[in-house]
Image (cartoon, rainbow over the protein chains, first blue to last red):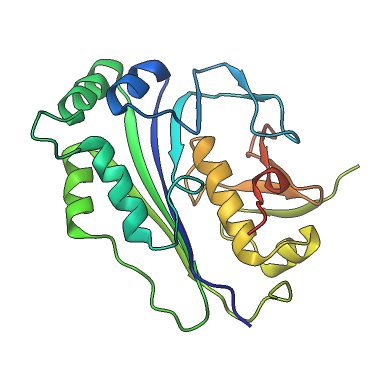
Length: 152
Length: 72
């Protein structure tokens, strides 16, 4: 028996001069993990002392957005940048910060589906938004090659 | 002492997930999170040990797969 579809997305802002609180204040959301260059941080009970090689502000939708429709996860991230409230969103302030601190933005998309499932595509609106930031988009899509022995 | 079970840049095989006792999608999802949190891309080489520890090419710890696996 195949596993069901699994999907989530991550947004990452990185650079040696990153000050994580500045990104948090602009996007108005607490990151999954954030650290400055050289900072010791914990990635879990089995990896309590990791050293940041550069500054990273990292947000994952994995435990935040319910369901496994990749589009829902991408829409959640897009709304952080373009809330659609009629007022100027955080995008211009983020762009200004990226230039001022020489930061890079990356969007990564994870999707894993059962054998024979069609892989998703990235909506045009998301591609356009990432170009605007500008941000790199990375996809990590895969389908099961054979049923897992761990399936129920 | 832990043993290396993967030392390449592409997606690990089912041998790795079977050795760790997790489903293949769980392994892929965990590595996706670990690598991006460490500011690495999908093509960056990593080393995986049989206790779930993951290091970058310099041998520095970047996470543990078993920390990422949730009960779903």
